[in-house]
Length: 121
Image (cartoon, rainbow, N blue to C red; front, side):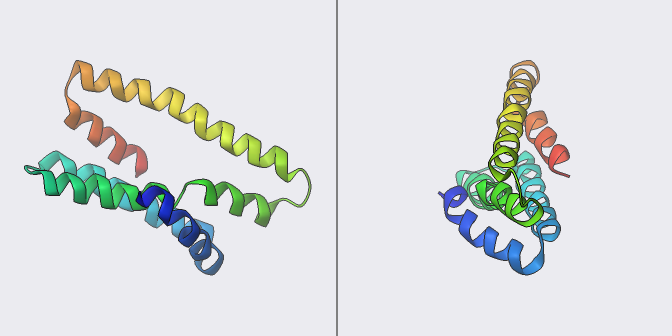
């Protein structure tokens, strides 16, 4: 739910504080949320780490990121740039998610969470 609710506010924050700052904070929040899951022991900690922290961080870089970059840096071919950024996001998921699945099947879920945290950092 936070993934979808955060995007409009993230776009406003990007306009006010800049793309780099908002994305850096969002990646740090994702890294913190996924890194803390390694030590969780109850359900409320999962809700806090993945539901709140990772939800806020990933929502801050969702569709608002591509729209803000496109509108701010490109005057021509905005549709092409938006399409390339969206395709890059989908391609990253096609590479990253099977890798994480393999890590979970081979080792455990904790190394996968650490991999997400390290990738975000």
